[in-house]
Image 1 (cartoon, rainbow, N blue to C red):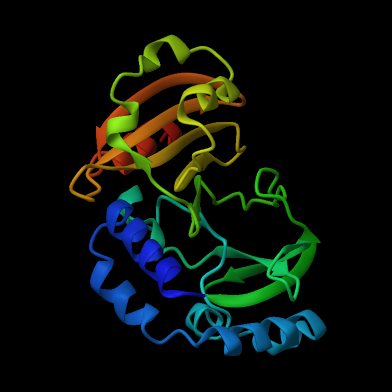
Image 2: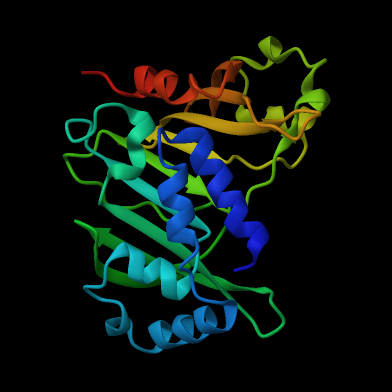
Length: 242
């Protein structure tokens, strides 16, 4: 993993998670170099016992940042959704690459429970068709955080009337935002109702606004540009019915 990806992860967490930036930066500094990560990836592909029962920090240090981190959240265990990274039930997705650094077509799916690796499986990998997982009855909200996403420019969306896309299929939105990728997605436990967040970069290279899409299955219910401090509370209100 290169420094660009490391800093992107720090930025995303600092935007969406309350009070995590300092701790995350310290954690990132202990991640092994790319050669070590590739060696560990090969070892795990050959023998999953290399990481079974290891904790989250061990996996991150030896395998680097995953393509996607999924958090399975029991809202009774955290005070608010903007502390979602406090959950210890996770899934990490590591795509496999060829020697030419091309996607090989499959990925390692690493499941952690109580911060320990309990299962490692290989499944077909697709950026837009992540494997549907078995969700615990205690899970209220699922959060997917993507570590390799880019950022939309705030100036590029300034003239777009997003209201006219409400009620349409989400694919229509890509007609005006191009191939932009979500940085964070939050779902109810059925993965039908969801909130998708696109971080917006302003002219000063700062991140204070989020393009937020509220949807149900494939349809858009609402689109808003909101302050970064509001996004997770809005997602919680939309997804979590007490």
